[in-house]
Length: 301
Ligand SMILES: Nc1ncnc2c1ncn2[C@@H]1O[C@H](COP(=O)(O)OP(=O)(O)O)[C@@H](O)[C@H]1O
Ligand SMILES: CC(=O)N[C@@H](CCC(=O)OP(=O)(O)O)C(=O)O
Image (tube, rainbow, N blue to C red; front, side):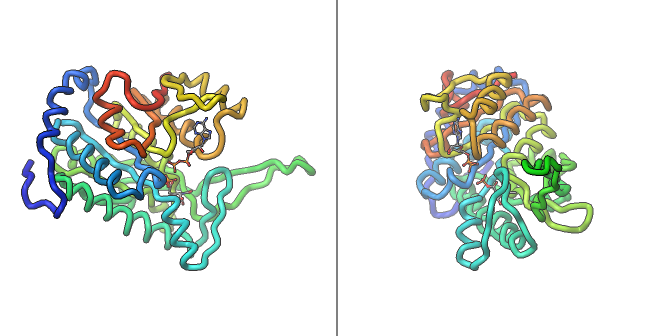
């Protein structure tokens, strides 16, 4: 891998030593693919974005195969507001009409995706920005949600518009990139068989990619230390059974529910370790991967 011809950012090669020293820790993983879900709340601060780009670049240098799936919920929200388009969430998913899905694609597959690509290239890596449409990598089908009307007890279909869930993931493009120096950066926008464009929750999208790639790890970078107990303390290791109990008890709520549910599905699909951690901690990815204690909540079967 060449480290010349980078953007203006400085490349600190001495940090590659940290990776070399830490490689023995990595050897316990039988596979090298690590999917990193980079949430919209974890972006924003330029110095954090730079640290994230350096981490991903160093992973690739160390022979690991990082695959970045990013979100951008807050950034979509700001653009919709600027354009005067109202937006609401139901069950953690953005109700997405035709005008909204155009903005979602523009923000996710356009500006955010290219900004992450630029940052990784600036850190000395080689990133390529993609979405589900590229190589028809991920196709989606319309999400069907139902709610029971408390008065009539009749089940009603909730129309979320162009909100999709992953239907099929084709590995071929990602397998090709894994053999190269290129780091894929993927936006959660996907085509449907009906010719429409679908807005997919980035956690769900990352889970589907990790499952299809048999990733050794799926890391969720968010804006909290990990899953917190009812007293607000970080839970270092969480079993699927405990997570389900915490959802029922109401200790896990809001945006953490789809994240934890994706973790459970990913574990069931064979992903060996799923971690939720604070993306606002500089070099969170390296801390998680290369220190024995790790940095967030490790979900286990
Ligand atoms: N038990 C819990 N532990 C940690 N966070 C929780 C918990 N229950 C609810 N949350 C909320 O989930 C949020 C993370 O989900 P979300 O905002 O969707 O993140 P992202 O944008 O990174 O996908 C946290 O900021 C927190 O407010
Ligand atoms: C259907 C749906 O809700 N899609 C999300 C996609 C972006 C996302 O998931 O971004 P974060 O990871 O930053 O939350 C949205 O429109 O906000």
